[in-house]
Image (cartoon, rainbow, N blue to C red):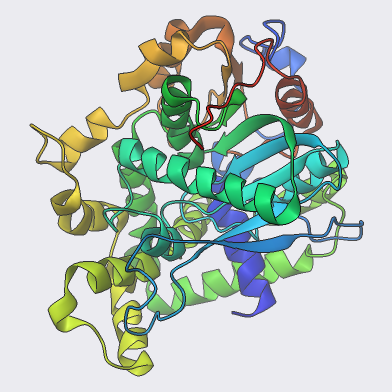
Length: 436
């Protein structure tokens, strides 16, 4: 994939695809928050360039291949690709360790996770960036069902993959974490909520602080919104839709070497985005979010339809191209739900309810190590749901008035919040069982 396309996908995927003190937990008043954009779609899109490209030194990043599930390394057209690929930013001395889980379809090498990995590495952290469960690599190497999308199951698969990752970097690179924290963004934040429950019960990792940014409270609602935006292609027409995608790629390229620590970079980028209509921005966001879906569909078919596995790379490419027509709701309802096993649940709506944030609010409230950051104008979550979360979790939640969906993580106030929460260890000492 050419670099410009990688930057576009990596940036925008991460949009859909992120205190320890109660003083930070509040509803931030509009008059006290200088974030400049009131249009939630424009705000969301400003995060498209939040990555580590630009004219500043970057830490060395290792690609670590973590052993995948048995039987996943010898499938036709994917032979030898059954390991899980994670990004590792190492400190050469004992240091805190941060796990980052990005939004839907995000990989470890592009997008906002790389920016925050760089930021925390500068603060003295070692950092591991995990792939989103909604990627072909995770589905192949780490998803037991091969059909990720149900948050409780994905969190279990993530938890086991994180344990293998931790064991590998400790053994191979002599990493000795002094404490462990986790940052989740969007879908990664929802998965992080379920991870917090697992680690509280099992203590196999010993995560002492969680920051969950813009989790979709109702994932089914969020995916339906993305599908609606994607359907705008019919209104634009095929030629105009392709031209619009090209325009988005060019715009990302235009800002590829500008300083992400300068708010002026985002102001100039927003000025260019403002030349697009709301529907055009929605469509670009949807296309970026759905970019990884065809490969995920292909892996799902490869695992669950062995009688019709392709025998050549040409046939594999044809199937991936055909899967471009698959939407998130179609993937979940047609391919994933039949693989998810949960007593009494048979429909996408029931799985979405059981795997929602609201279903675990009581358990999050009992865990003071969990903190949430929400935006009141998030277009993928309605305001009533945000109010419900805030009422349930109280001073564990900070609500910003603006920012759309992950569109204010570049803003200085938000960066300060992230650093303050995750940079301060919880009062409880890290406790890991000897079972690992």
